[in-house]
Image (cartoon, rainbow, N blue to C red; front, top):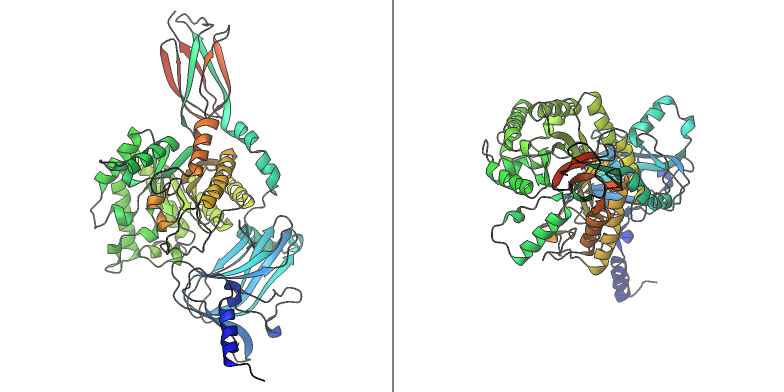
Length: 609
Protein backbone atom coordinates (compact mmCIF):
# COMPACT_ATOMS: atom_id res chain seq x y z
CA UNK A 1 0.00 0.00 0.00
CA UNK A 2 1.35 3.45 -0.92
CA UNK A 3 0.71 6.68 0.96
CA UNK A 4 -1.14 9.53 -0.72
CA UNK A 5 1.16 12.08 -2.29
CA UNK A 6 0.12 14.85 0.12
CA UNK A 7 1.01 12.68 3.14
CA UNK A 8 4.43 11.88 1.67
CA UNK A 9 5.11 15.61 1.21
CA UNK A 10 3.98 16.27 4.78
CA UNK A 11 6.34 13.62 6.19
CA UNK A 12 9.26 15.00 4.18
CA UNK A 13 8.49 18.51 5.42
CA UNK A 14 8.41 17.31 9.04
CA UNK A 15 11.77 15.62 8.63
CA UNK A 16 13.31 18.77 7.20
CA UNK A 17 12.02 20.74 10.17
CA UNK A 18 13.89 18.56 12.68
CA UNK A 19 16.70 20.24 14.67
CA UNK A 20 20.37 19.86 13.76
CA UNK A 21 20.85 16.31 15.18
CA UNK A 22 18.34 15.03 12.62
CA UNK A 23 20.97 15.89 9.99
CA UNK A 24 23.31 13.45 11.69
CA UNK A 25 25.77 11.47 9.63
CA UNK A 26 25.50 7.90 10.91
CA UNK A 27 29.21 7.23 10.67
CA UNK A 28 29.43 3.85 12.33
CA UNK A 29 26.08 2.20 11.84
CA UNK A 30 27.48 -0.87 10.06
CA UNK A 31 28.97 -3.82 12.02
CA UNK A 32 31.88 -3.96 9.57
CA UNK A 33 32.97 -0.53 10.83
CA UNK A 34 33.07 -1.37 14.53
CA UNK A 35 36.21 -0.88 16.58
CA UNK A 36 37.68 -3.34 19.11
CA UNK A 37 35.20 -5.22 21.27
CA UNK A 38 33.56 -2.94 23.79
CA UNK A 39 35.09 0.23 22.36
CA UNK A 40 32.73 1.00 19.49
CA UNK A 41 31.16 4.42 19.77
CA UNK A 42 27.39 4.49 19.54
CA UNK A 43 25.58 5.40 16.34
CA UNK A 44 24.29 8.89 15.73
CA UNK A 45 27.17 11.18 14.81
CA UNK A 46 25.84 14.72 14.67
CA UNK A 47 27.09 17.33 12.24
CA UNK A 48 27.75 20.12 14.72
CA UNK A 49 29.48 22.34 12.18
CA UNK A 50 29.35 26.10 12.28
CA UNK A 51 31.65 26.70 9.32
CA UNK A 52 29.82 24.88 6.51
CA UNK A 53 27.11 26.64 4.50
CA UNK A 54 25.50 23.21 4.21
CA UNK A 55 26.09 19.83 5.87
CA UNK A 56 28.84 17.62 4.43
CA UNK A 57 27.87 15.15 1.72
CA UNK A 58 28.01 11.92 3.78
CA UNK A 59 27.57 8.36 2.58
CA UNK A 60 28.60 4.85 3.62
CA UNK A 61 30.49 3.44 0.66
CA UNK A 62 32.78 0.49 -0.16
CA UNK A 63 36.38 1.59 -0.34
CA UNK A 64 39.61 -0.05 -1.43
CA UNK A 65 40.37 -3.43 -3.01
CA UNK A 66 38.47 -5.35 -0.30
CA UNK A 67 35.41 -3.16 -0.65
CA UNK A 68 35.27 -2.45 3.08
CA UNK A 69 32.47 -0.11 4.10
CA UNK A 70 33.68 3.32 5.23
CA UNK A 71 32.10 6.68 5.88
CA UNK A 72 32.86 9.21 3.15
CA UNK A 73 32.46 12.91 3.80
CA UNK A 74 32.84 15.49 1.03
CA UNK A 75 33.42 18.91 2.59
CA UNK A 76 32.81 22.09 0.64
CA UNK A 77 34.53 25.41 1.41
CA UNK A 78 34.65 26.19 5.10
CA UNK A 79 33.74 29.73 6.05
CA UNK A 80 35.85 30.92 8.94
CA UNK A 81 35.82 27.76 11.04
CA UNK A 82 35.90 23.98 10.86
CA UNK A 83 33.70 20.96 10.28
CA UNK A 84 32.89 19.49 13.66
CA UNK A 85 31.38 16.02 14.07
CA UNK A 86 30.35 15.21 17.63
CA UNK A 87 29.35 11.86 19.08
CA UNK A 88 27.79 11.79 22.55
CA UNK A 89 28.91 8.80 24.60
CA UNK A 90 27.73 7.34 27.90
CA UNK A 91 28.89 8.78 31.25
CA UNK A 92 32.52 8.00 31.97
CA UNK A 93 34.37 7.11 35.12
CA UNK A 94 37.49 9.00 36.09
CA UNK A 95 40.64 7.81 34.37
CA UNK A 96 42.66 7.78 31.17
CA UNK A 97 41.03 7.20 27.79
CA UNK A 98 42.48 6.49 24.37
CA UNK A 99 40.81 8.17 21.37
CA UNK A 100 41.35 6.65 17.92
CA UNK A 101 40.09 7.22 14.42
CA UNK A 102 41.28 5.52 11.23
CA UNK A 103 40.93 7.82 8.26
CA UNK A 104 42.15 8.80 4.83
CA UNK A 105 42.16 12.27 3.30
CA UNK A 106 42.30 13.61 -0.25
CA UNK A 107 44.46 16.66 0.52
CA UNK A 108 46.57 18.02 3.39
CA UNK A 109 43.76 18.52 5.91
CA UNK A 110 44.32 19.15 9.60
CA UNK A 111 42.25 16.79 11.75
CA UNK A 112 41.71 16.85 15.51
CA UNK A 113 40.30 14.29 17.92
CA UNK A 114 39.00 15.60 21.22
CA UNK A 115 36.98 14.53 24.26
CA UNK A 116 34.94 17.13 26.11
CA UNK A 117 31.81 17.54 28.18
CA UNK A 118 28.63 17.34 26.13
CA UNK A 119 27.06 20.47 27.63
CA UNK A 120 28.28 24.01 28.18
CA UNK A 121 30.45 25.16 29.74
CA UNK A 122 32.62 22.74 27.78
CA UNK A 123 35.59 21.20 29.52
CA UNK A 124 38.25 19.75 27.26
CA UNK A 125 39.86 16.57 28.60
CA UNK A 126 42.24 15.85 25.73
CA UNK A 127 42.97 16.65 22.12
CA UNK A 128 45.30 15.42 19.37
CA UNK A 129 45.99 17.36 16.18
CA UNK A 130 47.55 15.91 13.00
CA UNK A 131 47.74 16.53 9.26
CA UNK A 132 47.98 13.06 7.66
CA UNK A 133 49.57 12.61 4.24
CA UNK A 134 46.97 12.48 1.46
CA UNK A 135 46.13 9.09 0.01
CA UNK A 136 47.17 6.87 2.92
CA UNK A 137 45.14 5.33 5.71
CA UNK A 138 46.20 6.82 9.01
CA UNK A 139 45.21 5.88 12.55
CA UNK A 140 45.14 8.96 14.74
CA UNK A 141 45.59 8.29 18.43
CA UNK A 142 44.98 10.76 21.21
CA UNK A 143 44.43 10.62 24.94
CA UNK A 144 42.07 12.22 27.41
CA UNK A 145 42.27 12.29 31.18
CA UNK A 146 38.89 12.62 32.91
CA UNK A 147 39.67 13.79 36.47
CA UNK A 148 36.35 12.74 38.00
CA UNK A 149 33.30 10.76 37.03
CA UNK A 150 31.58 12.73 34.32
CA UNK A 151 28.17 12.82 32.71
CA UNK A 152 27.71 12.50 28.97
CA UNK A 153 30.84 13.31 26.97
CA UNK A 154 31.35 14.30 23.34
CA UNK A 155 33.93 12.53 21.20
CA UNK A 156 34.68 15.12 18.53
CA UNK A 157 36.37 14.98 15.13
CA UNK A 158 37.27 18.43 13.82
CA UNK A 159 38.31 18.97 10.20
CA UNK A 160 39.86 22.26 9.20
CA UNK A 161 39.89 22.33 5.40
CA UNK A 162 37.70 21.37 2.41
CA UNK A 163 38.20 18.02 0.72
CA UNK A 164 37.16 14.41 1.03
CA UNK A 165 37.62 12.36 4.20
CA UNK A 166 37.05 8.62 4.56
CA UNK A 167 36.60 7.29 8.13
CA UNK A 168 36.88 3.54 8.64
CA UNK A 169 36.63 3.38 12.44
CA UNK A 170 36.56 5.41 15.63
CA UNK A 171 36.86 4.23 19.19
CA UNK A 172 37.11 5.37 22.77
CA UNK A 173 38.73 3.00 25.27
CA UNK A 174 39.47 3.18 28.98
CA UNK A 175 43.20 2.64 29.56
CA UNK A 176 45.15 1.43 32.60
CA UNK A 177 47.72 4.21 32.80
CA UNK A 178 50.02 2.30 35.14
CA UNK A 179 50.18 -0.60 32.70
CA UNK A 180 51.25 1.44 29.67
CA UNK A 181 54.71 0.86 28.19
CA UNK A 182 57.22 3.66 28.74
CA UNK A 183 56.97 4.99 25.18
CA UNK A 184 53.21 5.31 25.40
CA UNK A 185 53.41 6.94 28.84
CA UNK A 186 55.73 9.53 27.29
CA UNK A 187 53.21 10.14 24.54
CA UNK A 188 50.40 10.53 27.05
CA UNK A 189 52.43 13.18 28.88
CA UNK A 190 53.14 14.86 25.54
CA UNK A 191 49.45 15.02 24.64
CA UNK A 192 47.97 15.77 28.06
CA UNK A 193 50.80 17.65 29.68
CA UNK A 194 52.04 17.07 33.20
CA UNK A 195 49.67 15.50 35.71
CA UNK A 196 47.76 18.16 37.61
CA UNK A 197 46.08 17.93 41.03
CA UNK A 198 42.34 17.23 40.88
CA UNK A 199 40.06 20.25 41.12
CA UNK A 200 37.19 20.32 43.57
CA UNK A 201 35.13 23.13 42.03
CA UNK A 202 33.10 23.95 45.13
CA UNK A 203 36.14 24.10 47.42
CA UNK A 204 38.09 26.08 44.84
CA UNK A 205 35.41 28.77 44.58
CA UNK A 206 34.86 28.86 48.34
CA UNK A 207 38.57 29.49 48.94
CA UNK A 208 38.92 32.35 46.46
CA UNK A 209 38.96 35.23 48.96
CA UNK A 210 41.50 33.45 51.15
CA UNK A 211 43.80 32.92 48.14
CA UNK A 212 43.44 36.56 47.11
CA UNK A 213 44.43 37.68 50.59
CA UNK A 214 47.40 35.29 50.57
CA UNK A 215 48.66 36.04 47.05
CA UNK A 216 47.68 39.68 46.48
CA UNK A 217 48.07 41.39 49.87
CA UNK A 218 50.66 41.95 52.57
CA UNK A 219 51.07 44.20 55.59
CA UNK A 220 52.22 47.72 54.70
CA UNK A 221 54.35 49.47 57.35
CA UNK A 222 54.89 53.23 57.66
CA UNK A 223 57.25 54.69 60.28
CA UNK A 224 57.17 58.45 60.88
CA UNK A 225 60.18 60.13 62.50
CA UNK A 226 61.48 63.65 62.93
CA UNK A 227 64.75 64.99 61.55
CA UNK A 228 66.59 63.51 64.54
CA UNK A 229 65.13 60.06 63.94
CA UNK A 230 62.74 60.16 66.91
CA UNK A 231 59.35 58.47 66.40
CA UNK A 232 56.39 60.80 65.93
CA UNK A 233 53.28 59.51 67.68
CA UNK A 234 49.80 60.73 66.81
CA UNK A 235 50.72 61.74 63.26
CA UNK A 236 48.09 61.47 60.52
CA UNK A 237 49.16 59.21 57.66
CA UNK A 238 47.24 59.10 54.40
CA UNK A 239 47.58 55.87 52.35
CA UNK A 240 46.27 56.04 48.77
CA UNK A 241 46.25 53.03 46.45
CA UNK A 242 46.93 54.66 43.07
CA UNK A 243 47.33 51.72 40.68
CA UNK A 244 47.15 47.94 40.88
CA UNK A 245 50.24 45.85 40.28
CA UNK A 246 48.05 43.29 38.51
CA UNK A 247 47.25 44.25 34.92
CA UNK A 248 43.55 45.01 34.57
CA UNK A 249 43.62 45.93 30.91
CA UNK A 250 41.67 46.22 27.66
CA UNK A 251 42.36 46.23 23.96
CA UNK A 252 43.12 49.82 22.97
CA UNK A 253 40.23 51.70 21.35
CA UNK A 254 41.50 54.15 18.73
CA UNK A 255 38.25 56.13 18.97
CA UNK A 256 39.41 57.30 22.41
CA UNK A 257 41.76 59.69 20.59
CA UNK A 258 38.91 61.52 18.83
CA UNK A 259 39.26 65.28 19.33
CA UNK A 260 35.56 66.19 19.08
CA UNK A 261 33.89 63.76 21.45
CA UNK A 262 30.18 63.09 21.66
CA UNK A 263 28.38 62.01 24.82
CA UNK A 264 28.84 58.43 23.61
CA UNK A 265 32.59 59.01 23.27
CA UNK A 266 32.78 60.58 26.71
CA UNK A 267 31.00 57.65 28.33
CA UNK A 268 33.47 55.27 26.65
CA UNK A 269 36.46 57.32 27.79
CA UNK A 270 35.21 57.56 31.37
CA UNK A 271 34.68 53.79 31.66
CA UNK A 272 38.02 52.99 29.99
CA UNK A 273 40.02 55.21 32.33
CA UNK A 274 38.09 54.16 35.44
CA UNK A 275 38.36 50.38 34.94
CA UNK A 276 41.75 49.79 33.35
CA UNK A 277 45.38 50.38 34.26
CA UNK A 278 46.79 48.87 31.05
CA UNK A 279 46.00 48.65 27.35
CA UNK A 280 47.05 46.35 24.53
CA UNK A 281 47.80 48.26 21.32
CA UNK A 282 47.10 46.27 18.15
CA UNK A 283 50.52 46.26 16.54
CA UNK A 284 49.54 44.33 13.40
CA UNK A 285 52.15 44.54 10.67
CA UNK A 286 49.58 44.88 7.88
CA UNK A 287 48.30 48.04 9.56
CA UNK A 288 51.59 49.35 10.96
CA UNK A 289 53.50 48.96 7.66
CA UNK A 290 50.82 49.24 4.94
CA UNK A 291 53.47 49.87 2.25
CA UNK A 292 57.09 48.63 2.20
CA UNK A 293 59.15 50.81 4.52
CA UNK A 294 56.22 53.13 5.29
CA UNK A 295 55.35 53.01 9.01
CA UNK A 296 52.47 54.65 10.85
CA UNK A 297 54.72 55.76 13.71
CA UNK A 298 53.01 59.09 14.34
CA UNK A 299 49.59 57.49 15.00
CA UNK A 300 51.01 54.81 17.28
CA UNK A 301 53.13 57.29 19.23
CA UNK A 302 50.03 59.44 19.71
CA UNK A 303 48.21 56.44 21.21
CA UNK A 304 51.16 55.54 23.45
CA UNK A 305 51.51 59.15 24.63
CA UNK A 306 47.80 59.27 25.46
CA UNK A 307 48.06 56.07 27.50
CA UNK A 308 51.13 57.30 29.35
CA UNK A 309 49.53 60.67 30.10
CA UNK A 310 46.55 58.85 31.61
CA UNK A 311 48.66 56.52 33.72
CA UNK A 312 48.10 53.30 31.71
CA UNK A 313 50.79 50.78 30.90
CA UNK A 314 50.99 49.78 27.24
CA UNK A 315 51.76 46.45 25.62
CA UNK A 316 51.98 45.47 21.97
CA UNK A 317 49.73 42.85 20.32
CA UNK A 318 51.55 41.54 18.32
CA UNK A 319 54.74 41.85 16.27
CA UNK A 320 54.79 38.65 14.18
CA UNK A 321 51.44 37.06 13.35
CA UNK A 322 51.03 35.22 10.08
CA UNK A 323 47.37 36.23 9.76
CA UNK A 324 48.30 39.93 9.98
CA UNK A 325 51.15 39.91 7.46
CA UNK A 326 51.13 42.77 4.93
CA UNK A 327 49.49 41.73 1.66
CA UNK A 328 52.28 43.30 -0.32
CA UNK A 329 54.56 40.48 0.90
CA UNK A 330 52.69 38.12 -1.42
CA UNK A 331 54.08 39.60 -4.65
CA UNK A 332 56.42 38.26 -5.79
CA UNK A 333 56.33 34.97 -3.90
CA UNK A 334 58.91 35.58 -1.18
CA UNK A 335 61.68 33.24 -0.06
CA UNK A 336 62.14 32.40 3.61
CA UNK A 337 65.34 34.45 3.55
CA UNK A 338 63.60 37.54 2.20
CA UNK A 339 60.78 37.12 4.73
CA UNK A 340 63.26 37.03 7.58
CA UNK A 341 64.96 40.11 6.20
CA UNK A 342 61.60 41.88 6.35
CA UNK A 343 61.09 40.62 9.92
CA UNK A 344 64.54 41.93 10.83
CA UNK A 345 63.72 45.35 9.42
CA UNK A 346 60.39 45.50 11.26
CA UNK A 347 62.06 44.70 14.57
CA UNK A 348 64.91 47.15 13.99
CA UNK A 349 62.50 49.97 13.19
CA UNK A 350 59.78 49.39 15.79
CA UNK A 351 62.17 48.92 18.71
CA UNK A 352 63.30 52.56 19.03
CA UNK A 353 60.12 53.97 17.49
CA UNK A 354 57.53 52.24 19.68
CA UNK A 355 58.76 49.58 22.07
CA UNK A 356 60.62 51.97 24.35
CA UNK A 357 57.16 53.17 25.44
CA UNK A 358 55.79 49.68 26.06
CA UNK A 359 56.05 47.42 29.10
CA UNK A 360 55.76 44.23 27.05
CA UNK A 361 55.34 42.98 23.49
CA UNK A 362 53.84 39.74 22.21
CA UNK A 363 56.66 39.01 19.79
CA UNK A 364 54.88 36.00 18.24
CA UNK A 365 51.17 35.33 18.12
CA UNK A 366 49.26 32.06 17.54
CA UNK A 367 52.27 29.86 16.86
CA UNK A 368 50.94 26.40 17.77
CA UNK A 369 48.76 26.24 14.65
CA UNK A 370 50.93 28.63 12.61
CA UNK A 371 51.08 26.19 9.68
CA UNK A 372 47.30 25.76 9.60
CA UNK A 373 46.86 28.93 7.53
CA UNK A 374 48.68 29.58 4.27
CA UNK A 375 49.89 33.18 4.36
CA UNK A 376 53.11 34.85 3.20
CA UNK A 377 54.65 34.32 6.65
CA UNK A 378 53.70 30.65 7.07
CA UNK A 379 56.96 29.23 5.60
CA UNK A 380 59.09 31.06 8.18
CA UNK A 381 58.14 28.62 10.95
CA UNK A 382 57.51 25.56 8.78
CA UNK A 383 59.79 22.59 8.20
CA UNK A 384 60.75 22.01 11.83
CA UNK A 385 62.19 25.52 12.25
CA UNK A 386 59.54 26.83 14.64
CA UNK A 387 61.40 26.60 17.96
CA UNK A 388 64.73 27.75 16.59
CA UNK A 389 63.32 30.75 14.73
CA UNK A 390 61.08 31.96 17.58
CA UNK A 391 63.90 31.57 20.12
CA UNK A 392 66.25 33.50 17.83
CA UNK A 393 63.85 36.43 17.42
CA UNK A 394 63.09 36.56 21.13
CA UNK A 395 66.83 36.90 21.76
CA UNK A 396 67.10 39.65 19.14
CA UNK A 397 64.15 41.44 20.66
CA UNK A 398 65.73 41.45 24.14
CA UNK A 399 69.04 42.76 22.80
CA UNK A 400 67.23 45.74 21.33
CA UNK A 401 64.70 46.08 24.16
CA UNK A 402 66.30 44.83 27.39
CA UNK A 403 63.71 46.54 29.65
CA UNK A 404 60.64 45.34 27.71
CA UNK A 405 59.04 41.97 28.45
CA UNK A 406 59.21 39.52 25.54
CA UNK A 407 56.13 37.34 25.31
CA UNK A 408 54.53 34.67 23.15
CA UNK A 409 50.75 34.60 22.80
CA UNK A 410 48.30 31.91 21.60
CA UNK A 411 44.67 30.88 21.62
CA UNK A 412 45.70 27.24 22.10
CA UNK A 413 45.09 26.35 25.74
CA UNK A 414 46.00 22.67 25.34
CA UNK A 415 49.19 20.97 26.51
CA UNK A 416 50.58 21.47 23.01
CA UNK A 417 51.12 25.14 23.84
CA UNK A 418 52.71 24.19 27.15
CA UNK A 419 55.18 21.88 25.42
CA UNK A 420 56.05 24.45 22.76
CA UNK A 421 56.82 27.02 25.46
CA UNK A 422 58.85 24.39 27.31
CA UNK A 423 60.89 23.72 24.15
CA UNK A 424 61.48 27.45 23.66
CA UNK A 425 62.79 27.79 27.20
CA UNK A 426 65.05 24.75 26.75
CA UNK A 427 66.38 26.42 23.59
CA UNK A 428 67.37 29.44 25.68
CA UNK A 429 64.59 31.76 24.57
CA UNK A 430 64.29 34.79 26.91
CA UNK A 431 60.59 34.37 27.63
CA UNK A 432 59.40 36.95 30.17
CA UNK A 433 55.69 36.17 30.13
CA UNK A 434 53.09 33.81 28.69
CA UNK A 435 50.11 35.19 26.80
CA UNK A 436 46.87 33.22 26.56
CA UNK A 437 43.77 34.19 24.62
CA UNK A 438 40.37 33.31 26.04
CA UNK A 439 37.73 34.33 23.52
CA UNK A 440 34.54 32.58 24.67
CA UNK A 441 32.13 33.26 21.82
CA UNK A 442 31.02 29.62 21.83
CA UNK A 443 30.39 29.58 25.57
CA UNK A 444 32.40 30.17 28.76
CA UNK A 445 35.17 27.94 29.98
CA UNK A 446 34.31 25.77 32.94
CA UNK A 447 35.94 26.47 36.30
CA UNK A 448 37.89 23.21 36.05
CA UNK A 449 39.20 24.04 32.59
CA UNK A 450 40.25 27.54 33.63
CA UNK A 451 42.08 26.38 36.74
CA UNK A 452 43.82 23.50 34.98
CA UNK A 453 45.04 25.76 32.16
CA UNK A 454 46.59 28.23 34.61
CA UNK A 455 48.04 25.45 36.78
CA UNK A 456 49.69 23.84 33.76
CA UNK A 457 51.26 27.06 32.47
CA UNK A 458 52.32 27.98 36.02
CA UNK A 459 54.71 25.03 35.97
CA UNK A 460 56.84 27.00 33.50
CA UNK A 461 57.49 29.61 36.23
CA UNK A 462 56.63 32.61 34.08
CA UNK A 463 53.85 35.16 34.66
CA UNK A 464 50.63 34.21 32.86
CA UNK A 465 48.63 36.96 31.15
CA UNK A 466 45.10 36.46 29.82
CA UNK A 467 45.67 38.69 26.82
CA UNK A 468 42.31 38.55 25.02
CA UNK A 469 39.24 37.79 27.12
CA UNK A 470 35.78 37.91 25.52
CA UNK A 471 32.47 36.76 27.02
CA UNK A 472 29.20 37.16 25.12
CA UNK A 473 26.17 38.97 26.60
CA UNK A 474 23.65 37.89 23.96
CA UNK A 475 21.62 34.79 23.26
CA UNK A 476 23.84 31.72 22.58
CA UNK A 477 24.32 31.06 18.89
CA UNK A 478 26.73 29.20 16.65
CA UNK A 479 29.88 31.27 16.15
CA UNK A 480 31.72 30.85 12.87
CA UNK A 481 34.28 33.68 12.62
CA UNK A 482 32.17 35.67 10.20
CA UNK A 483 30.44 39.01 10.83
CA UNK A 484 27.24 38.36 12.80
CA UNK A 485 24.27 38.09 10.45
CA UNK A 486 21.65 38.84 11.55
CA UNK A 487 23.13 41.23 14.13
CA UNK A 488 24.03 39.55 17.39
CA UNK A 489 22.47 41.80 20.01
CA UNK A 490 23.01 41.99 23.73
CA UNK A 491 20.09 40.91 25.93
CA UNK A 492 19.17 41.47 29.60
CA UNK A 493 19.45 37.74 30.32
CA UNK A 494 22.77 37.51 28.50
CA UNK A 495 24.12 40.55 30.33
CA UNK A 496 23.22 39.03 33.70
CA UNK A 497 24.97 35.75 32.78
CA UNK A 498 28.01 37.67 31.48
CA UNK A 499 28.27 39.62 34.74
CA UNK A 500 28.08 36.47 36.87
CA UNK A 501 30.72 34.67 34.83
CA UNK A 502 33.14 37.58 34.56
CA UNK A 503 33.03 38.22 38.29
CA UNK A 504 33.85 34.56 38.87
CA UNK A 505 36.58 34.57 36.19
CA UNK A 506 38.31 37.71 37.50
CA UNK A 507 38.14 36.53 41.10
CA UNK A 508 39.59 33.10 40.27
CA UNK A 509 42.38 34.41 38.06
CA UNK A 510 43.28 37.20 40.50
CA UNK A 511 43.54 34.57 43.24
CA UNK A 512 46.08 32.45 41.33
CA UNK A 513 49.69 33.32 42.18
CA UNK A 514 50.93 32.67 38.63
CA UNK A 515 48.48 35.06 36.95
CA UNK A 516 49.73 38.59 36.25
CA UNK A 517 46.98 40.23 34.23
CA UNK A 518 43.71 40.12 32.33
CA UNK A 519 43.11 42.12 29.17
CA UNK A 520 39.47 42.38 28.15
CA UNK A 521 39.10 42.34 24.38
CA UNK A 522 36.54 44.74 22.98
CA UNK A 523 35.42 46.49 26.13
CA UNK A 524 32.52 48.00 24.14
CA UNK A 525 29.99 46.61 21.68
CA UNK A 526 30.37 49.62 19.38
CA UNK A 527 33.51 48.25 17.69
CA UNK A 528 33.53 44.62 18.84
CA UNK A 529 35.16 41.99 16.65
CA UNK A 530 32.67 40.60 14.10
CA UNK A 531 29.85 42.50 15.77
CA UNK A 532 29.61 40.11 18.73
CA UNK A 533 28.12 41.53 21.96
CA UNK A 534 31.13 40.92 24.18
CA UNK A 535 31.61 44.45 25.50
CA UNK A 536 31.35 45.65 29.06
CA UNK A 537 29.61 48.68 27.54
CA UNK A 538 26.72 48.81 25.12
CA UNK A 539 27.15 50.62 21.80
CA UNK A 540 25.96 53.87 23.34
CA UNK A 541 28.57 53.64 26.09
CA UNK A 542 26.15 52.75 28.84
CA UNK A 543 27.56 50.14 31.27
CA UNK A 544 26.33 46.57 31.32
CA UNK A 545 26.06 44.84 34.71
CA UNK A 546 29.50 43.28 34.14
CA UNK A 547 31.07 46.74 34.03
CA UNK A 548 29.60 47.63 37.41
CA UNK A 549 30.67 44.28 38.89
CA UNK A 550 34.27 44.71 37.75
CA UNK A 551 34.31 48.33 38.91
CA UNK A 552 33.27 47.17 42.38
CA UNK A 553 36.02 44.54 42.47
CA UNK A 554 38.87 46.55 40.95
CA UNK A 555 38.17 49.95 42.49
CA UNK A 556 36.55 49.05 45.83
CA UNK A 557 36.96 45.47 47.06
CA UNK A 558 40.59 45.22 45.92
CA UNK A 559 41.75 48.70 46.92
CA UNK A 560 43.43 49.84 50.12
CA UNK A 561 42.84 53.48 51.02
CA UNK A 562 42.53 55.24 54.33
CA UNK A 563 43.73 57.71 56.92
CA UNK A 564 45.58 56.35 59.94
CA UNK A 565 47.29 57.63 63.10
CA UNK A 566 50.75 56.57 64.21
CA UNK A 567 51.10 54.72 67.52
CA UNK A 568 53.49 55.55 70.34
CA UNK A 569 56.33 54.13 68.25
CA UNK A 570 55.47 56.38 65.31
CA UNK A 571 54.19 53.46 63.27
CA UNK A 572 51.16 52.61 61.16
CA UNK A 573 50.57 49.04 60.05
CA UNK A 574 48.00 48.47 57.30
CA UNK A 575 47.23 44.73 57.26
CA UNK A 576 46.33 43.00 54.00
CA UNK A 577 47.13 45.97 51.78
CA UNK A 578 46.58 45.11 48.12
CA UNK A 579 49.53 45.11 45.77
CA UNK A 580 50.24 48.20 43.70
CA UNK A 581 51.56 51.71 43.59
CA UNK A 582 50.85 53.86 46.64
CA UNK A 583 50.99 57.53 47.50
CA UNK A 584 51.77 57.92 51.22
CA UNK A 585 51.69 61.30 52.90
CA UNK A 586 52.30 62.57 56.43
CA UNK A 587 53.24 65.96 57.88
CA UNK A 588 53.77 67.57 54.48
CA UNK A 589 55.98 64.73 53.24
CA UNK A 590 54.82 62.54 50.35
CA UNK A 591 56.23 59.33 48.94
CA UNK A 592 55.22 57.13 45.99
CA UNK A 593 56.25 53.50 46.32
CA UNK A 594 55.32 50.03 45.00
CA UNK A 595 53.94 47.44 47.41
CA UNK A 596 53.94 43.72 46.56
CA UNK A 597 53.06 40.53 48.38
CA UNK A 598 56.59 39.20 47.82
CA UNK A 599 58.19 42.59 48.60
CA UNK A 600 56.06 44.26 51.28
CA UNK A 601 56.46 47.97 51.63
CA UNK A 602 58.11 49.33 54.80
CA UNK A 603 58.88 53.05 54.55
CA UNK A 604 60.33 55.61 56.91
CA UNK A 605 58.99 59.13 56.51
CA UNK A 606 60.93 62.09 57.93
CA UNK A 607 58.71 65.02 58.88
CA UNK A 608 59.36 68.39 60.43
CA UNK A 609 58.97 68.82 64.17
